[in-house]
Length: 343
Image (tube, rainbow, N blue to C red; front, side):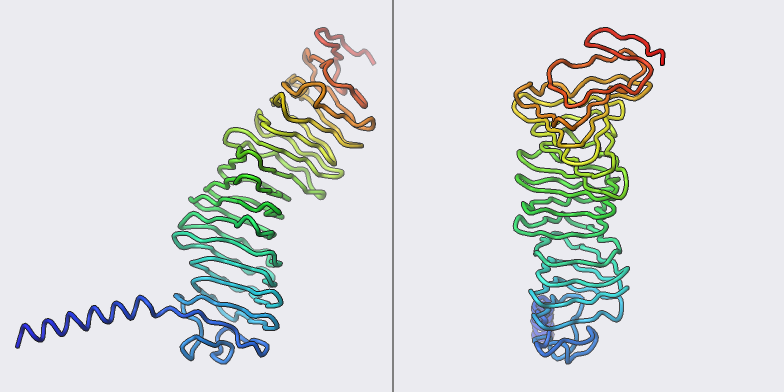
């Protein structure tokens, strides 16, 4: 009898565990306009209730689902024409995130946790709260094109494979690493205080794009492949000596080396577009024209300017054909010699 009872209890335990493992539901919005997240009638396929922390959610075209409280789910899909209204709420997603519709809100925050997960879609994301990537490595899908105001990567790696562009509008931060995948594009519109940025994949592009503020060009783990400065009316300044394995393009605004040497390569191109400026050196530190780019691969627009800016001896390169050549420090240097400017 005892053996029978023990066996029955064990069987019931196994059955309970098995049921628990498959108890997660894929909850879809109702297709009749949606509703508040915490109302059962907003959902179908959700075990006659609202989504639980182990459930994934799908917001269908024509539906608006509105968060009314702090919420955790295990996967979010917003279909084209669907709206997820997060308002000011705190949202945690422990699985993948796909947005082909509209994720709205004001100061709402979102944490992408879980052991892994993919960020995908071409929809819009308007909340200005921080999107935190934590717990496990995450990947931005190659076919995606998403823009977030702030991304903080905490102790993990976020790999960007987006070939259409991942955009971080205001702040890329955190103790983790963002790794550029092959053929990926990253647009940085604000600060880039993240601990580590690996932009060495061949090829990939990193664009610094703020037209409202100057930017510091992040020191990367080894080298940039293609680096773009696209900052009309603003300046991007290097934070460290920088190697370019592909192309260096100043398409708008100015690039200042900040007293750090730029090292190019023999096969890549260096371009200054119309009305752009390259400033070399600081009053205290002399640097040279970006090295290793060959003359045939250097294109300095006739309205562009290269400014040699050091007060110490500074060599003016005879490799490129300059549009405009200026010096703003108190010494002028020609190739290997310098003289003081008296007025």
